[in-house]
Structures are given as C-alpha cells and as structure tokens.
Image (cartoon, rainbow, N blue to C red):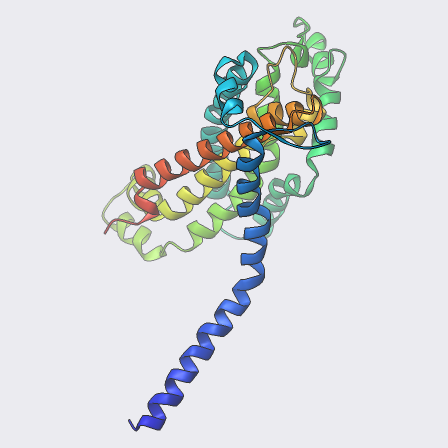
Length: 299
C-alpha cells in the first residue's frame, strides 16, 4: 500500500470516528446538562443554607451532619428501603413471567402483549387518581369487601397498608415495560439450544435454569439497575395517592427532600439529601454490577 493510500485510509477512519461522535453528541449533551450538572449543583447547594431568595450562606457539611439527627430523614430511608426490597423482586418475577407467557408471537399473543403494555402509556397522575378512588375508605375495594361479608379496611388510611398499595401502582405501570425488554432478550436466545436440551431429556425448569437465565444475564442486570433507579425516584404516585402519609408511612427519601426544599424552603438541606440518594443509587448499582460481573455471560 502506497503512502497516499495509507493517508486516505487514515482520513477515512478519522471521518468515521468523527461522524460517530457527531451522532452521539446530542445525547451526550443531554446527559451532561440533565444528569452531570445537577449532581454538582446538588453538592454545591448542599454546602449552603438557602431559602430560594436572597444570598446563600455557606455552612460546610452542616446539612449532611443534620441528617443523622433528623428522625424523619432516617424514617424516609427505611421507607425507601422497604419499597425497593418489595418492588424489585416482584417487578422482576412478574415482568419475566409475562415475557415467558407471551414470548411466542401469534395473533392472540399480540393482543395480550398490547394489554400488558398499555399501562406504560398511561400517566402516573392518572393511575394515582384511579388507585385513590379505588382504595379510599368508601371506594370500590371496600365496597367489594363488604359485599363479600368481609370487614371494611382502612387501606390508604393505614400505615401498614398504604405502602403495598403504592407499590401496586408502580408495578401496574412498570411490569409491561420490562416485559418488552425481557421478550427482546428471550428472542435473542438461539432455539437450537432448547432443541438440544429437549433431545437430552431436559425438563422445562432445567432449560429455564441452565439456558434461559444464564443467557438473559445482561438483560437481567439492565432490568434490575433501571428498576432500582426508578424505585428510588418514585414521586408522582406518592404525591397523588398519599401525599407521603399516613403518618409519613409512604414518605420516601426523594419525596422528603422535595418537601424540605419546596414546602419548608430549605433548598440546601434538600439538595444534600438528594446527593445522598444519588450516592446510594450509585453504590447499589455498582454492587449489582460486581455481583453479576457486569452482565457477562460465562462460557
């Protein structure tokens, strides 16, 4: 190859790389503006005391130290932990189960796929209003219970029942979305592996355990991480359904930070809480990556 050919080839490769970065640039700008910048802004605000008006007053790490003595903050952490622990396995099992049921395409299956995915297109506010109507003290659920001769339940008025009801609204809207992701992962698994397993006498559960789950590992990691982040950031359903009540039973850390900032005008303290939430999400996500080895499929 002559030096002119080498030079033209290098120019072609540089143009390819430049074109690739050019296509990625809009998404990269959005990532920096809406994710990276707010993190640094939260750190900066967290080191100050600010009511939203006037000048900021530098207080150092006082906002972060105050969290330790804040009983409501500690309780919001416990509520967030319960929500995440209950939501993640239920969301994973239900979405994967639905994906397995509607994996094989057909006319009837397409109808069920549409039905299961439809809640994803409904706004969280609408779902919250419907659930509030159903689960209020004189709502549809209590009407059904009393009609069956069962005692009336407090439901949204109960500290023990409000959180499971809240989780049910999140599941209603999220399961269909993750079902579609699992279907895509299942369709990428070669059918020859299942056929060979059947020839060897493997039962359904054995095929699921030794073929489906290992080859779905990257998809499982993606679903767990994204559903974890979404569980931490639940807001609309809480605001519409319970407003954090009763007795702070559904006040998550993110919702508590919102109230601190926009109801009590302690923007510095609210920003500090949000930064702690960010660190929690980051550490748990990294732990998931480490436990699942980055989603790599073992040979």
